[in-house]
Image 1 (tube, rainbow over the protein chains, first blue to last red):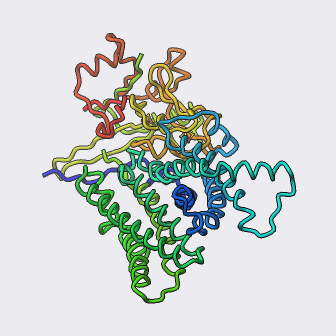
Image 2 (cartoon, each protein chain N blue to C red; image 1 turned 90 degrees about the vertical axis):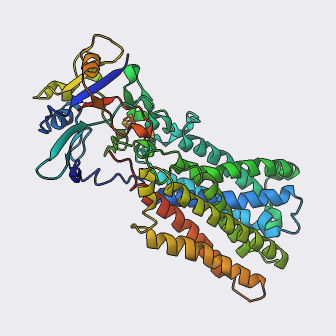
Image 3 (cartoon, protein in one colour; image 1 turned 180 degrees about the vertical axis):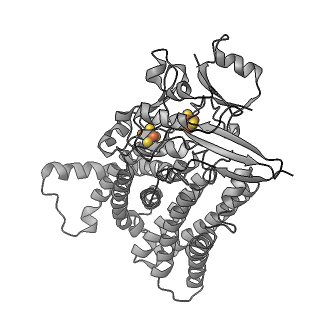
Amino acid sequence: MKEELFVSGRNIPNIDPYLNIWHWQIPLYLFLGGLAAGILFFAALFTIMGKEKEMPAAVKKAPIIAPIALILGLIALFLDLKHKLFFWQLYTTIRLESPMSWGAWVLMAITPLSMLWVASYMKELVPGWKWKNNLLESFEGFVIKYRLWMAWMIIVLSVILGIYTGILLSAFNARPLWNTSILGPLFLVSGMSTGAATILIMSKSKEERRTMSWIDLLLIIVELFFITHLIMGMKAGSQVQIDAVSLFLGGQFTVSFWVFVILLGLVFPAILEILERIGYHIPVVIPVALILLGGLMFRFIMVEAGQLTRYLY
Amino acid sequence: MRYAMAIDTLKCVGCSDCVVACQMENNVPIGFCRDWVTETVDGSYPNVEIELRSERCNHCDNSPCVRCCPTGASHIEDGGIVLVTHHKCIGCGACIQACPYEARYSHPEGYVDKCTFCIHRVRKGDKPACVAVCPTKCMYFGDLDDPNSEITNVLKNRKFKSLAPEAGTNPQIFYLI
Ligand code: SF4
Ligand code: SF4
């Protein structure tokens, strides 16, 4: 019988026992990116569908959050960098093979677009708002004229941004927990769901709330389906993937994953939204807060747990 | 040209001279390393086997660390040596996540650092510091494209393995077994 007695590795306190180079900055960045992508997606979608009147919060109000989230996300990314003074090197080349690179470029494109979007609605959002400058006034007219074009650009970019938050992780073959192509769609849907929740809480119209809460419910169901898919795929994968997913199935992240992400972050808010739809009155802030918290926790757990998983040799 | 290294696990005694030589040669800050020695004990008493391996960056042919680098700081030099250009590295950590062998570390100065196959020595015709210093002469360094090189011969005549080939990286450090 063969039995491995022990494996001693290097014993270097600065590197071992495992490399954990990404801390809170990256999951926060992924969360904020997904949130902004979700909000912008719905703003653009309802504009393209010609529903600006019916969905005022989605199209006009909630997008204010997007540039704020994007800038905070970029700050988080910047804080993650260890060689900060060389940050600009990121924008000297485009490397399509590197998600980090094209993601940074997508952010560079969508952040100003989201600001333009908010600026073009400034007069409707703040009664009496004036741009105090003729050039800006005429520029605003120009932006409003091409709003539909902007919506098309934003809808494409927001989907790319949402998927990117997952691909940034899934591209790493060396971290078996991340290395699954479902992570892109999963993070996209999760981001959209947090975006929908934000719109939900900012909306004052009954009709709009109804629509957004149906959309959110649907997104949560898709998300649960994708997570099942993720776990099944890993269980049927190679040894390193089986080991990776066991972190959620009895391992060290079991409680945090099932309680905070699945139960409190997805199932519970879904039940609350269904109850609301069949006539009970539930303060909207509860499901919204749970969804946002669940989304944030999900990214923290994935980033933390993923860094524990590795190839064995 | 394809530089590679073959390391004889049957000759290695685990003295860690290669680790110290590298730290001296390359000014590796205290508390970090570019190479290290692992010890795997296999079997149950009295049939026990020990394998000692001096490990470092595998200078992979299909290197995920180079692919994921957003700035091009991680790149491949002549002979397949994987290098990091320090003044281009932003320290994003992507390459550290991408390496299945945990061969990279974040240098206290911010950039990412790793084994360079002692490219500054190799260009002058010398061997990497670890190879040169090994008291049991268990490491072979050379050009795999040269049919007469020592490393080509040793790999022709001995059984060898590489680490986690299933990671798809095509590692270029071979362990003679
Ligand atoms: S061992 Fe790691 S750092 Fe070295 S080339 Fe391979 S993937 Fe890159
Ligand atoms: S840490 Fe440096 S070398 Fe590594 S991927 Fe980022 S920029 Fe490239």
